[in-house]
Image (tube, rainbow, N blue to C red; front, side, top):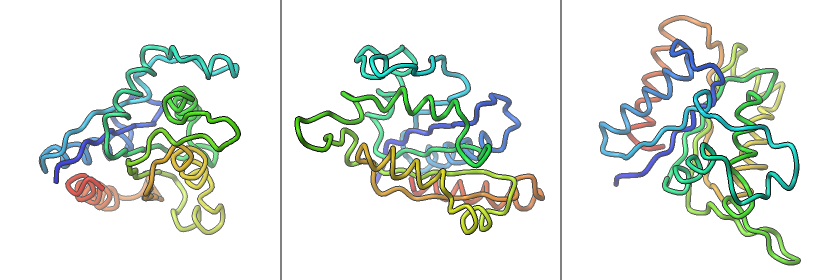
Length: 193
């Protein structure tokens, strides 16, 4: 069954040599070859401001790049979110992207005396995080807290479930390790998982 996939490449550096971009490309190429539809959002190439006030965040008139990202996310059945681990978390520009995109009126809807209504139900996601440390160390010692926060506080909050995760450790490792991860991303892309 064909799926509509939105790829959110969250690396803040547009340099094509970054491994996150290679992973994103491998997934996209394989997904398209398998008959899935793909739209891509490369955060490093988008122009949007910081969110500096509640009024700005609640404004229904989002900046053009944000409004376009919302259209892509609304269109998709499945999201692939990729980012490098920086200081134990997602890069700041990706967090700003989520603050801009996951606004009330789009990602969720306020209701009087009730929890907000989830605006993005029916979508699934996969989070892919690259890091210099071993992935097992990040998971066991640090509790993979950035992934848990993204999953629970953003994606689940707006109704995106299920959310799977792939942690890629020792990213500066051997060419064989990188080739293995690129092959895995191709399999995930073909399966739209």
